[in-house]
Length: 136
Image (cartoon, rainbow, N blue to C red; front, side, top):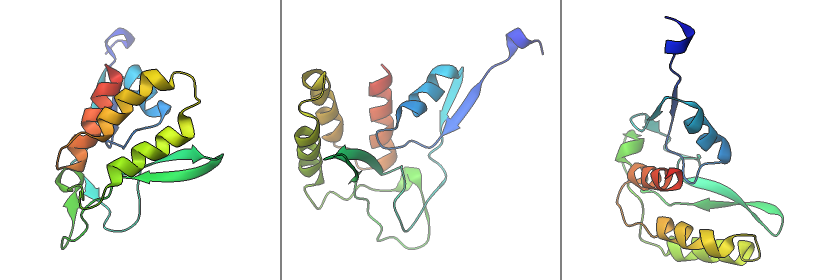
């Protein structure tokens, strides 16, 4: 295969509000695969359902709560979002309070708010919708 026919294929799990390097990976690849048919860890936090932001200059986790009441293992695309708390409202307020003075806040916050308020059942679908929206 000649170098002009080479394709770059990148694969990554659908993270929650991924970092800039994730989007750079998408931009540099000819084919990008969102791998959501791998095991979701039963315990602990991972980037699939949480992201770190700065609050008062210190790292703070924003977490999408997931239902961990299942037995055995689940794939990322089988994990349900736990909507029994008001996590969306709390997350939006945290972002607003900490980034309201940031450049372009008025432009980006409506997009972020609509992504946080997206009402789907599955974590994978939730993350994939956000990734597609942010790459448009």
